[in-house]
Length: 271
Image 1 (tube, rainbow, N blue to C red):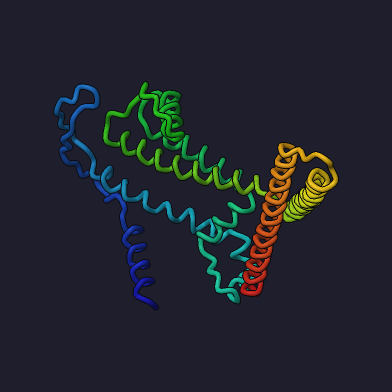
Image 2: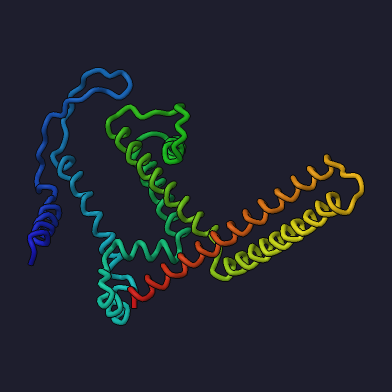
């Protein structure tokens, strides 16, 4: 047993040992009122202070998700994971859920956080939901603001969670907008076809301008220098266009070849 594991077990024992003490124990709580900021003193229960650390036990929700996951209970999946040195922990289960059903996970998490945070803020429930949603979306109109330390803490956590959920939504949407393997093949084929046509057109333009330059310099009795310069410019433009198109096609093929080789290396490493 490693030192890290011993520390984790000790931390879990400490978190699980926190519990309200039986009996009626009170102490004097000094604070300021929410709106008038006048100093005040009230009698508070000791259970209130001891109940707050009990929220650290919320990590048990992640453990329940892990223990009831099909990936964790399936022997074949765990065998494959052991061969590939993949640890079946809560992080892996959450990544798998985000891969399989990202929309459902984000929707459930956002709505749950919205309702719980709005219930925590002790004002009108609809107003609290409005405050939490505006803070969650990082808008902040300022029509409603928290006054107590608890409300400020809830809004702070809501803003942090909102920024994280926004980043996850952007990542999920970007992944959904990516082309599939078949779509990438079709797109690459279409791009190769267009580049091939451009190269052929540029080569035809080079031949045409070469013939026209030869015609106006060798076959005509009177040389029109302006027309010769015009065809020379078109000749140079056609050569430049042909070289540019060939370079674009070569870079595209090199990029696809590198991606294919990287996928093969990753696949061989997994096998």
